[in-house]
Length: 322
Ligand SMILES: O=P(O)(O)OC[C@H]1O[C@](O)(COP(=O)(O)O)[C@@H](O)[C@@H]1O
Ligand SMILES: [Mg+2]
Ligand SMILES: [Mg+2]
Image 1 (cartoon, rainbow, N blue to C red):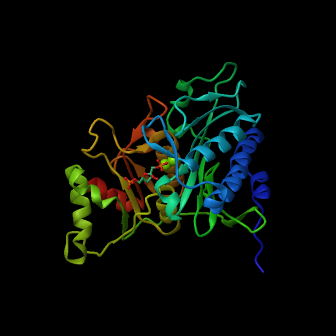
Image 2: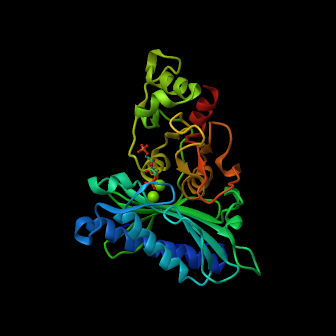
Image 3: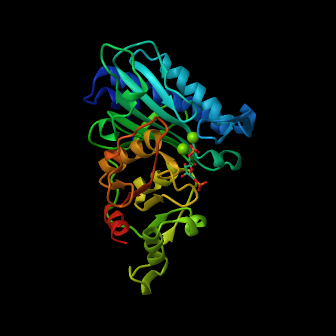
């Protein structure tokens, strides 16, 4: 019988500062607790709306608030964390410690999926904290290339944790004892694909190049791309990106005319940047528009947005060429 190494053994073997490992371990452990609340749903009082809005002016679901509190409390208790930032909190929350790490997260990605029992997830990004002084919001605004670790948990048919600390991207599956086990040692994104993910209902709002790219894909074998494409849209970035890490594809959430002043819907620090690091390290490309790497976008505020076009390298090039 195949044995799958426990996450703790894998983590112990990584070449990374011990303090960073404690932060990654804390996130991984809290995602186990979150997976339990997600799976219990109504039984844990986790369905429905919270009756509040977050800083993005989005209606908060009960599970958005619950998971945010869980992850915030856990990380504030972690000795190597200097401050946290979250989709669900207006401002950063310093822990009172100096040095170590800053953690940003989307505690519950894919909120519209909660009540229909479809996949949701947790996305996290870890940055170095300044030494010798208390952290400020500006310390979070250094760009995705400075991430020392990033990853996500996806609560789907299986519960999985996918992360990067050094070069590679590694996947773990939650066993029936509540332990992460190494099941996907070296995740690679195939360079070619025939699958795209985009919310097609926004077609009329897109910029012309995005419309051209999608229309060419829809034209299939007899169109300019000379192949038939398949489409998927889970409405949880975490699950759409997971599919791409497992079998290739591209995921787009482009700028559109509904809110012309913002670059896109998704958030840079705790959605775009961590997913971009995973995709690049798995051999794919992660851009705003087919060309500009998301990891090169330097934020100006904690809750900055970003346009996203990521996935199989050759297909991202096709987006750029459209
Ligand atoms: O409802 P839309 O416009 O298709 O947007 C779906 C996108 O919004 C998100 O749900 C935003 O994340 P949150 O649920 O964390 O706000 C993404 O995960 C997903 O890709
Ligand atoms: Mg999200
Ligand atoms: Mg969220």
